[in-house]
Image 1 (cartoon, rainbow, N blue to C red):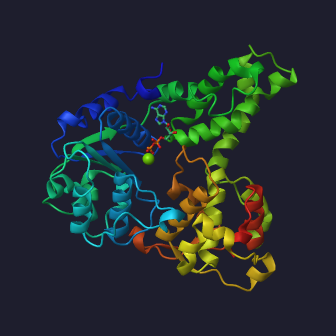
Image 2 (spheres, protein in one colour):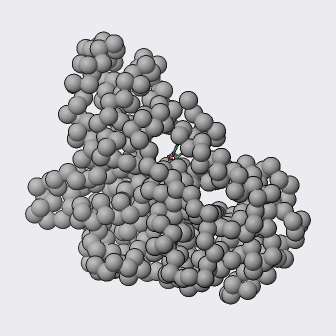
Length: 428
Ligand SMILES: Nc1ncnc2c1ncn2[C@@H]1O[C@H](COP(=O)(O)OP(=O)(O)O)[C@@H](O)[C@H]1O
Ligand SMILES: [Mg+2]
């Protein structure tokens, strides 16, 4: 049965967070939520904080995913947080300006103090993927000290995939309240996926509704020991359920004969796993020359957008990013398509991880792609590297200095874009 807010197996985390983040319990100590990808950190934290803000008059909250904004100084981060706390949305009518520019931490704090409203009301600042702020001078330090620096009742929630000790390199910061989101067991994966029938599109066909349970049982039994990521299991379920049901719809196997259905689709299930990680052996053409269009057609949805983002980052100068990736401006650009032939004469340039992610999220936003299932961006990138669509230009361990280049054929990227009903001409 699904628990509070529709989450399975997270009752204790939800209860603990609801307690420590409750307005009456706030004492200025930050909350640090950590765990592997797709363990429900983002969705659980947001649901709990939303319910707390809705339950208190005048309460404010700001949620920022640190991978969605490209910054090298905390200025942008501070401005975005302040915009969100103030309910200020940069738009054409206000010239895309932020509420207040925050060149220093002091300006940011003063901005918070000047927000007005009930000074005793709670404020929640949630920073997701906070590990990305590690190398930004003073960012984490300022965030954690916000209650002290502003004198306001602020609850700072940091969400991270790395443990606290690896995140902070400073000693004077108060220890946060730590909350670990453990990996799910096979039993929990089963219980969660049982509720994802409609999210996986499995409720479209009435005749096979009853097969969802046996199917999820087989899927979690086969995969949950090798794949710990709920997003990926859900993606597999969406892809493989039609395969599982096909013999029933064809009338060749009875819907009660689960053993036969298992047997028939076992080989496809095995293949599905390889496909998921794009570890398929590249086609013949790929070994001779560059990557093929064929290999790209099996890319999962988000990987296609990542490939496009890498392509744009390789062929467009960074100085045009702001202009290119604001919707309105993009429409006004003249159509000067970079065709396969043109692009053959233009050398792709290197781009940083930071910029790639900023372009990726801007593209998702521009195309209004549903991101409720958060993509694991690092897995996507390393998959594209192993498919020889991207190449890594430095082997340094520091995330900041890693650079990539998109070496996929421009023609192929255009084909991929077309498969997503996306026209890249608007960008060139
Ligand atoms: N316990 C759960 N019950 C139901 N859905 C879940 C659960 N945990 C995660 N999910 C779903 O899995 C997806 C990934 O969760 P997310 O919160 O983005 O994970 P994380 O932030 O830890 O990477 C979301 O669509 C979320 O709704
Ligand atoms: Mg998350």
